[in-house]
Length: 529
Image 1 (cartoon, rainbow, N blue to C red):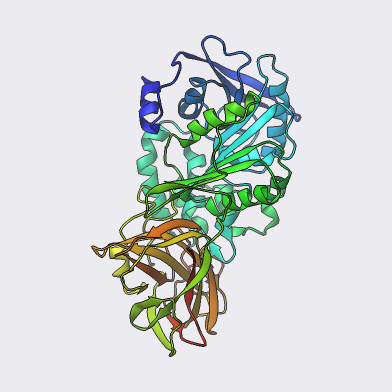
Image 2: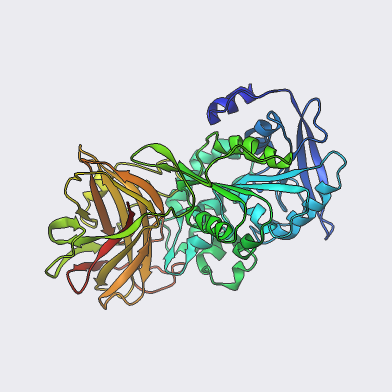
């Protein structure tokens, strides 16, 4: 029954077998004497010697075994799914992401020594994909391929930028790993999610873990007090290992995934260093279940594990939103797309011609009533593409829109904005969102980004890096740019005082000004063909 449910949920094709067995609680020794527990999934007959998919998880082995290990064991693999240090029966203490290299290398040594194991494929999503990168430059010859899904080599560091602190995702993850082993955790999750959402409004934020969990979380405290450059996160960034990967890599991401920029950076490093790699990016959010990872594990992973070449395809396969179609390319970013500036102008205009005269638009941002996060790159239910009509009706959101397009405009690649901005306070944020306005007037978010300023009383150019995208604005549609000063709780609200986000208790409203004209050319830059 579970096999059929997973097949339907992931839209998989029927497997060759549903008759699999699980050998539970294998003990994997680490060099320091700690033992990590693993389960081995195999077809009931003929499992020994099949290629082994290695999955290392902080979320336990039972549920993830059904979702990840079972489909692979039914389709040509034997699967070892291991609980990382400090969780679900594995020994030691869980310190997120800092201990995965040593433990991962020791696990590979153990796996290579097993008489039933031969060729190995590294497989996994999110954290389970990041652990692949931690060992990627020191793989034994038995490892034949890597399949990292919605992940990157420097996990979480994008969230902890000093010039744009994410809140909802790292805080929510800290709550998840802090509660997942409690009795009835899955049944209690809807209640816990509501409690966590309320906790994000706590002042000071340093008390929010108490509000959400009833106790301190060392990880959440570190997230709130240490930015990406802090020594606290040493050992988390494994991006320097990517260039030295020697096995083929198939990277799978989503346009609304929280880790997309880092995942595309990793692919570019592989590409630039001549490594065997391919990339697939669909219209997905982080936690969206699709058949693509399992299909790729079968088509790409099994082929390499058997010493064969997978079916031929282009190195880059992208889903172009708006066109709603898959397209093939030779590289990321694809060639042939020219950076084109669309200028903000008076009356909410957006054109490729720079305004002839200078002007300003203003709005008031109040962190006590922060501009909300609507859709986009989040881990909550209402994420991805959503109708932005209600958001754009708020007085703290400016919009700039092109005339109706007379022909399609295709945008594929990196997106950025240069917003000339000033504030009545020194500390302010600039949030920019690209939207597609359909003929009915509904505005659908495509990609966005935020930057924090610390000297905003001086008019300046705020450079905002938006998420990469592949989107076709169809004839009859319009291109729209939103400018505001937040997207709470995706990003921590800027209190306006300059106090550290963790300890700030006072919230100041600010008058924000967007400038445009010949000498202050506010614009969004789109890679257009």
